[in-house]
Image 1 (cartoon, one colour):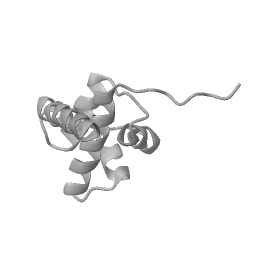
Image 2 (cartoon, rainbow, N blue to C red):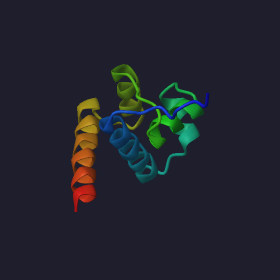
Image 3 (cartoon, rainbow, N blue to C red):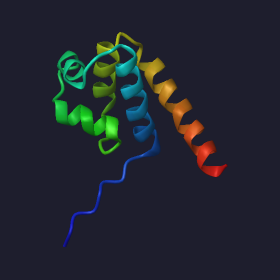
Length: 90
């Protein structure tokens, strides 16, 4: 039987979009951000692609690596989630 793709929460998907956006705005490579957050390249890539659901401690490490408050990063993800929902309905 074939493996089914992992279904992630819409907020985790939005978080990946926001992390990628913030990383690119700072002109960081995925490897650099992964190193700063003490994560593997593959795991961070999975978060950015929306196929991984990071724990709050991982989100905090990513936020620290981006020099951002964890709450700010999560708030941006929540805004992205609702923006995406509105676009799908339109």
